[in-house]
Length: 476
Image (cartoon, rainbow, N blue to C red; front, side, top):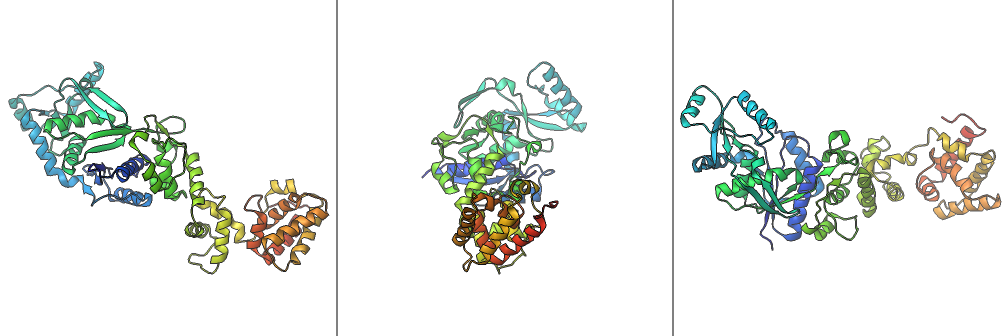
């Protein structure tokens, strides 16, 4: 059993972004496949931006996706004493230094560095200069002194990686009040949590050399790093709010199932190698390997997500889907909340819809199971209601009225035998019948649909359509 320790470390400063969700998933799949421990760390040191609502969004999103962690969450803000202690150690060893400057002075240093196309360099101040600045109320942050040379690591996904330290420049590890900034806090927490493998997104690659240098300066073991792909929009640009939904809660609300969403995320930066695309979470755990992770940026294609969602609907039992369908029908005003009087009929409706739905709200498109149509699709009417259709439908009503058992086979027999007697293809009866019953030209198989609607409803709706649609009238 592996003794590796991984962590997922989101910041509660906004919505639970799909990129973060994928990072959480990859960490989960790795640990559950190879063994080890997966910890959750909440990086909440930015007190001005961290919110309880954001934290709840993260917790709810992880729970919705079915991702469990080992042990209680660790809150970074509760470890500030260790962060400050590490900063002091770096100062005492000479690996870090204090630099006192006004905001205007810092901006001037940055502008000069930009002009010379180099990383910012901060001139070392004597103890006397520092005392003078401090007495004048000038803030003094703690900077890490980046050593010469380069930082090298073996990326678990990207292989051998190296970074020229000269392009980094000295960077802040603690603010003027002594509170830590991101890089120092991450390194201290990873060390204290025993993290051995930091598996994260490619947007963290530039952070890795800084964190490796801090580990080395503190004399601690450096964890292994692995950086997955970036997520891109379908046009190749950075995934953003303008390009569509970007948070997990939006996909929850848009009718996607957690199993399909997890399946989709797993395929963004990982491939099984055999072309398979549809997986449950347990199957992903079995199939996942770090060797299968990809370097090429992944395209977040909602069309594929929608297709996968449909596939996952078809993997579920009718009972599993019934609750989702009821929610959609209640939301659409088609079913009273808590109504249990039609369970057998509702299960039949779900079974008929299952091969066709791609999102939860698609169940509400089958309004015709709950109420008579109040309008008829004009395009379907013009295409399928011919001059002799009134006569055909009138004859069909009589055939249906005479059925002692109103079941799928009997209904189909009545429709096809009448069509044969009239010398027509069955479609010449099927299309106008569907329009009459549903008001639209699409839906489940007509004969199954009619069985669920029942004999009285079918006859009533057909007779109403004869009154409304023939002779030709304006279709509402």
